[in-house]
Amino acid sequence: MENLTDYRKLDPGLVNALNKTPPSQKQPMEVFVRTTEVPNQIEANFLQKLGVRGVNHKRCTFTAKLSPEAVTELAHQPWIHNLRLARNIRWA
Image (cartoon, rainbow, N blue to C red; front, top):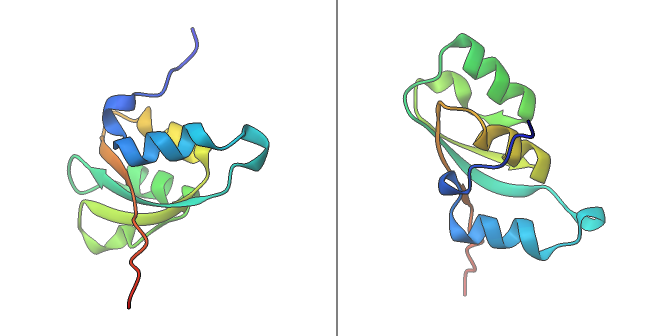
């Protein structure tokens, strides 16, 4: 059985970013990753392998520059609460 992305874990901006670019042109994107609780060692290792930053700081929200495939991988994990596209802040 094929695993499908749990879109309930993805914010609308992230879903839009994943869907609007052709697969051959998909670039990594800045994403906020929120876990249901502080990750245990196995979960922390999983996050670090994907490039999630700040995992060893005993917190539940992290940032990462993730490929679409990594976003999908994280969305499958039961311990991931949600994934949100980071917005670019423009300074005047």
